[in-house]
Image 1 (cartoon, rainbow, N blue to C red):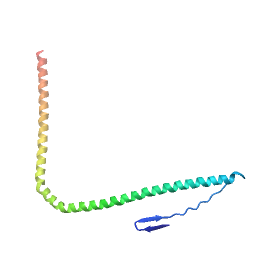
Image 2 (image 1 turned 180 degrees about the vertical axis):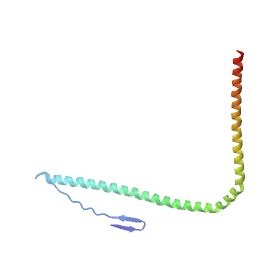
Image 3 (image 1 turned 30 degrees about the vertical axis):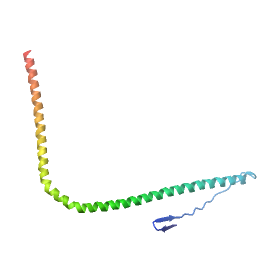
Image 4 (image 1 turned 90 degrees about the horizontal axis):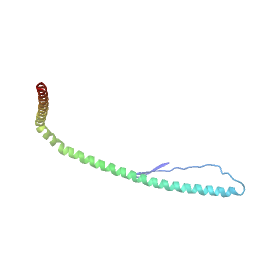
Length: 141
């Protein structure tokens, strides 16, 4: 059965246990039964305490989740506000400088390509000079 109290939902369960009690003989049956009942009571108490602890941890977790959801809503509202305030102006700036940036990027690409070609030509010239030197040295020997 579930009932709701404000922000909390409380679930109640009824557990019915059925079992068999055995007797170990005329003298030990009652003492053994009492010991079994004590063990069950101790086990039940331990489980109850563990459930209370887990319930407390779960409640703290839910509180943290609610807090973070609230924070996210606040941050989203702030972000939307900033987008409305600065979004239009940033579009103007982009339109104003975009063509110039494209031209400058093209110049950078052209200069980088020219530099790579010049370095390649220099390496080729060094190789050719080295090759001619070796051929000359070989011919003079």
